[in-house]
Image (tube, rainbow, N blue to C red; front, side, top):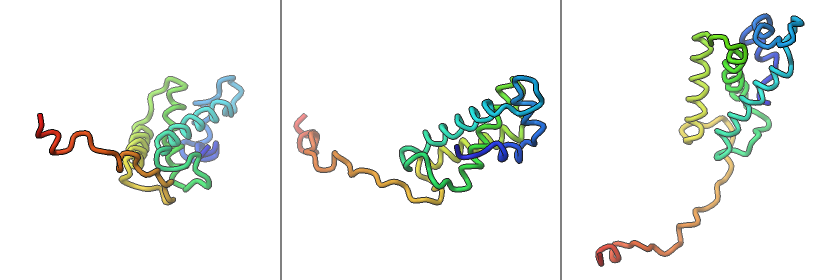
Length: 136
């Protein structure tokens, strides 16, 4: 996981975390709910980065913690079927935009991308060269 329970507490506060995750009504944030949200957010990050980076990314740059929390918080609100506050919704959208930009290669995350294999089509015979097309 790219983030932790304490990172969530820092973002939304310990009391809010309890409200969103206390499924057994014992007044304590349920670690299973917290971990599920963080694992899902981390999986979404890995899915976005897998084409460019070896995942999971270790050691993880700090931006991954921010992304993970920004994605996990709305999941926790959804877990309680609560409306996602606008500020958290905006951070989620920013995180998704960031993931998309990394996936497209427009920005990096501060580590070297994995090397990609050479194209397998570069040395192949062209089936439709200019001369062959002119034949039609």
